[in-house]
Length: 271
Image 1 (cartoon, rainbow, N blue to C red):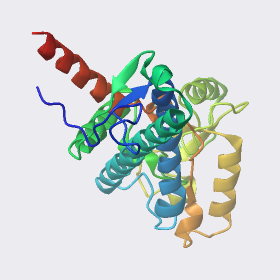
Image 2 (image 1 turned 180 degrees about the horizontal axis):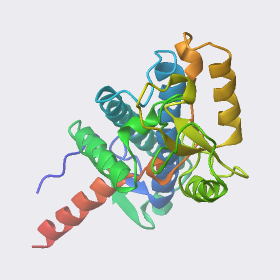
Image 3 (image 1 turned 30 degrees about the vertical axis):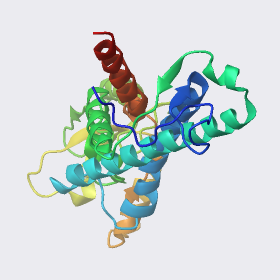
């Protein structure tokens, strides 16, 4: 079985000093860490520097999930390239300092890459993103007058009145579990019942619900709505780039795919 390799030569540099054939566990670890940091960083950057200026919230039907899936795919691609580049950079640096015997020692992973691998990385990251509870639309900013990026559970609102004591207890429980529906904050001392749609925007006969909302977002929302600044769409968006969840975890699929290939290659060679 032929293993596709982008670069093929010995780790000790005898074949080509600029190429890598094997990756050490240290190179794999450092590359994985780079990918873990890069994935949520790119997602957050897209949210703050692209989606917010474009005034694109998570609450737009059809459009938000599609745009969100593209953002996840872009972040997965950049994180995977960063993972590979960092591991190769470290391995080259390590090889330039270590002796040939030391380079050959220890557990190593055969390096392999082809352009088609990027499709596998993106697909695998997208699947794990969903398995870990992610929703593509949730990588976009929240609109303060609609259900936010972290809106999971709600309770019915009985008219325009504030939440009752019993309802506040339920909202606090939902807030600690899912976070503020607007910004994702799970550490608020208490959560208020956010009317969606807000009282000032409710249409005749429209049903309202309560979502848990932290005090900071509630105050911001109240100031904007009472200030009659609804014409400024940008001011109605709330970014949440630092609200990290399990679905932001990036698994090092470039190395996982290399390990699978090495396992198959070894079995085929032995047979």
